[in-house]
Image (cartoon, rainbow, N blue to C red):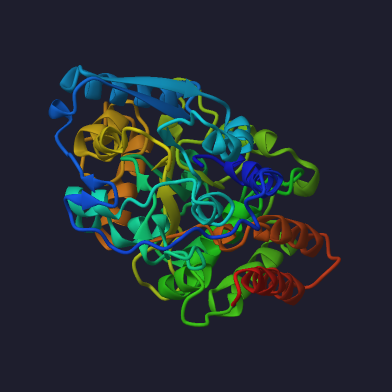
Length: 457
């Protein structure tokens, strides 16, 4: 979820869920809101110091780098505070987690805490299958409904019948780390073309034209895997559409169609940029990682990427900065963003109170500061960036801006289990001149409508 490889991974999620029999799973019974200190199983406890000896099993996909440093720090800090609770981590690569998660949750001895991905690709189908616990009681007890920005909490909500996303009961919680689609820029190249960090959408397009005229590649794109265009597409949609309409389309509310979200304007804009030569030369044949490395090597002015995703070596970050794509209407920036991971509790967990207590800690200001200390974008709290890294300072400022403005929108592909593949395929054809932007919009709406029928809508 934290890099462009997230979009490659999501394409396999629906396949693994279908193999586990979840895409057509029957919905278990219903459950309404619970009082703050009780659940269907009885009173809940929120003081980890009084829970006795507990062994929690945590499944995650943090296998190295800042991801591993952060989760190790969170686990260590929690266990230091509450030594009676032992957390046993099982880290696995993302692809392996997504393939194994449905079966692990159906097993007789599942993990207590799992990283269910948002959207219909994962969490929605796990809710329908009755494999993750309703967390309304913990959300009330810990104050998540007021502590978390509404646009972030909404990403973890589903109706009791499993047919509506973005409303109803809470089935997951964010952690105090963010992932957003940002625009990264090369400081020296921006100076070379005599431009400032864009404050408006018009400024951004002006910078693209200046870069092209100066012989500088305006935007680093590698789309060999059909992934590289997704970041630019989503960020441009956020600049040209309305936050409420984007969210309502993804959450299937208020009869919003994809044509109402800024998606048509974004596809048209990307087609124009490609036709003007604003993307990496022969970008459709360039691997995503090669394009990212070329950007770091100073061969392009801008790159759309996920927080902390640039392949930087020590000392290189001072050469770059980041910002959120400015809105065309002059309003505050809106960004496709979420927590860097999301935790849910197995419906079979024997220790849901302890699991919820750990999840609450992973979303705490202390966990956010641990993120900043490990130079990874924090969320849910105001923290001080570590050291004097100007690029990371930009990341922290972006996260603070998103929280203050409650300006996150979900990933567009969360709307259906197959929308990502549909969009990527259609965008590739459009950029190759095989179809027009209208065809991309029509295909996206057709995918959406087909999935709505499976929900009985």
